[in-house]
Image (cartoon, rainbow, N blue to C red; front, side):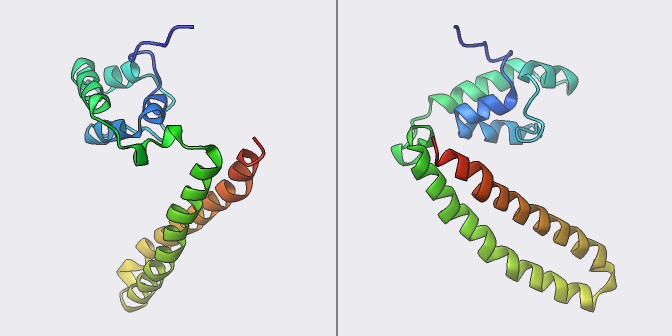
Length: 145
């Protein structure tokens, strides 16, 4: 089976193949995470973006040498899971608590910050839920492969 041309590829798949391409999408305000299911060409057409320019930028990023320590696609799945849990999830859990605590103090002192604090709490709850799902469902299943 031949590989689809870049204009046929979904944005999320492009980033999954090489995470460094995310910078190109961020530059143009293109959602590669939750909105990454759409083909690149469709997004460019809908948003009046120059597909050829974006394609050239993606190709340039992909040509840059990738350090072995950052070539996550070559890592064993168990090592990758361990890295995510022990690096990123530990960081999130460590940093969210003091941020939420300071936000709570500010909200108590300044009523106009109360709505922002509530949004932060919603984000924190969503983030904890997401991390929980990754650790206890996705990564647990991955450990069995």
